[in-house]
Image (cartoon, rainbow, N blue to C red; front, side, top):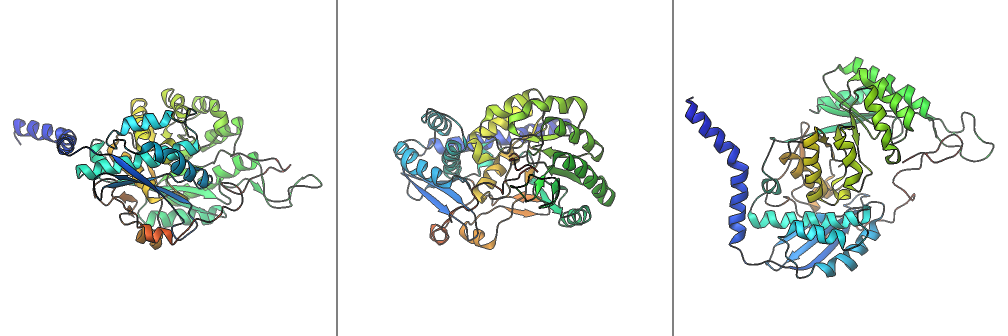
Length: 437
């Protein structure tokens, strides 16, 4: 290849994202003004036990609307009311093309900012606005964010078992499905460290269920990964979620003991109340840290990123307020060598998954995406759901977010009243005290 041809081709490739955005801007510039005419709040269980909230933003252009995720499994009705009674009336007549301006105005209009309910409301709006802009431009959202930085989005699978032998077998099954990254848990969620019900030294009356013990946990988990590494080798990228169960000094000790197993990351090894301990962790070992699943304010993670105390930003897109703020977080991470690992598993919905996808595939700060597969009832209700094949997430490539919702089917699946009163069964120590989170 001649040098001139090579340079010409390289320049053309570098200009592709900019050219796509300019094409979208030219198309949008020739269209008539657009206004928001109304909203619809669509709560649904998806045919299972989900508690999803979707926001549909309607516009003055016939047939043009956007949908976003405002899902909050644990404060569902608070979010629904905030959307219907507060955000909806305020939006009427506004220009949906002004995403940044609308996000900033909606962010401050409640006076007290951030928090899970406010940010879920912002997220529903923000994702719907990006969906509208992408549809009007005739492009997937990732094109408006700069275009693809990779061919697909790698995901990590979930594996585990009641003992180290069954956990290792579960990891092997994930590898056979094509996953290269696998999160490994043991026993109860958070992974081991529990004294069986009614066993051990307990008060005469009170808690007699499974009792969490930090020292047992710190002793158990390294043995789990030692066994798994012996079975699958060091090729697979292994992860583990501590789920904020440890206090400072035990978190430091666990991170130190896990270094020989070359973890891809340890997730939420500390509760958000004790983030200063990440300095101690960083000072004594190189075990990578992923942080932020229960964050709802970008400034919570900012010092950890800017001081390079963590390796992965582990926030949920809808809990941070949508695509607009997490794209900025990803750029912040890029400047400091910190990657993204958005929390998209569990009770998360397909729209939120795709919002993460569009940021992931367009960002050079991307690290990994959490796997989440949905049942047939959801795929029927929401055409355009992302698909996972051999460890990679793919979107529909349709304009906007690339997904829609059948309101008639959604209405067949009303949400149930939440039982149990919390995110998970509350873990307790031997003396009956609550264990974070």
